[in-house]
Amino acid sequence: MAAPAPIDRSSEADTRRRIILAMVALLQQQGYESASIKRIAAAAQASPSSVYHFFPGGKQELAIEAMHHGARGFSELLTKGLSSSADPAEATAACALLLADDLKQSHWSDGCPVAVTALETIGRVPGLQEAATRALTGWRDLVTAKLTESGIALDTARSLAGTVVSTLEGAELLSRVTADDTPLRDAAVHLAQLVGAAPRN
Image (cartoon, rainbow, N blue to C red; front, side, top):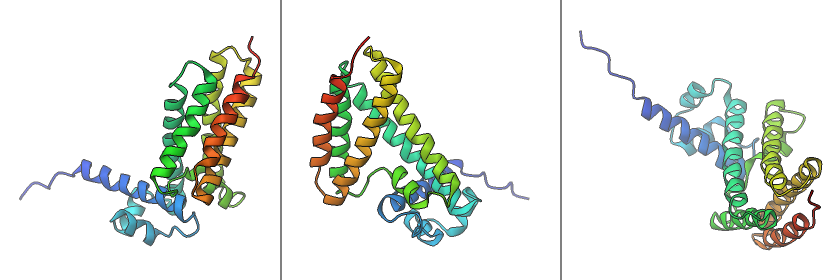
């Protein structure tokens, strides 16, 4: 009797990743409600049964994973921007400029899926709201750490970091809607001024 063929784990990992990336794109471009399992599978070049194989909880479980993926991507962008300068004002501005460049290169389609998905499903899909809250808190904490390194008191840094994240999210939305990176480039200027004016210990 022939031995069973070995399971190709690399192929499984690739399929799972394609499904997640397809969901990220659908959340960014069409929203949670329109992202059916059939549409997700087609975008991922996979079968609907494959989607349920990797995500037995269906669309909601997959959307949560896609939001985690999107959150990590935005965290990486923030980390890159915040580490670009020792000056927190310049570093904060860099985050907005990096976001503007990425959004423009995607032809205004690849914004962060986290906030958009949360707003669409708030109060109806608790798991997605929790994932969004975790992401937003994590981004705020990244900015807070940069601000406290420069001597800004923790309470002030945390409050200011929340404003930074809110401004970036809002400016990104305006840039996507208008297909113009001006809101993000304006945000870079004004966030730098705001951070630069914060009192130091």
